[in-house]
Image (cartoon, helix red, strand yellow):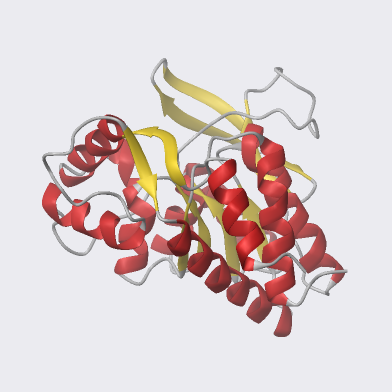
Length: 271
């Protein structure tokens, strides 16, 4: 068992929590864009209420532990490790519930270079426990707006985890995918599952548009989010996202391995 104290120390040492690499300037910019309902930061969420910058700052202070002082405009942002630990416990509870009812699960990430191993470890465990890990619409093309214009990506799965890649860049099944915030991949996956007439996911696990896109469509969703991703926390506050874990989503991939152990321990899925 990985103790809470050991994981807290790891979160701080790896800068998953505490002072993180995400800058205050970046976070505040995201809050301004979200308040203006810029689709680049909504991540597929259509908020019920108007969220002003001050509202978002208060929410992120409550959910992440960032400073609620609007005059604090520079330097590294901060995530409270106690909030991360509490959210990881809730995240584990959702996974345990899915396993208990043998719910089909869909895993997807917009951060394959960093988070693929985290989700793959969870996918392996829930599959071994009897849950179907779904891989719908593999190979489907998805047109996604990027800073370079609209690009066509293909939906692929690696170790049970969905990601997108530019066709021809790497062979299907390779671990290299594209970074994206778009909700379009999860929409394509869900549409593919419906058209196939098979199992539909009862839980989506991921980040960015995978979580917000699924939650907006009424599918239970849980995931990870940095301080510059307010959409997941708004989704949680409005009841569309079940759990959002605050942490830096851009550190080295191996730094997320202890989180897999911790979540599986708490969910009763350790082998």
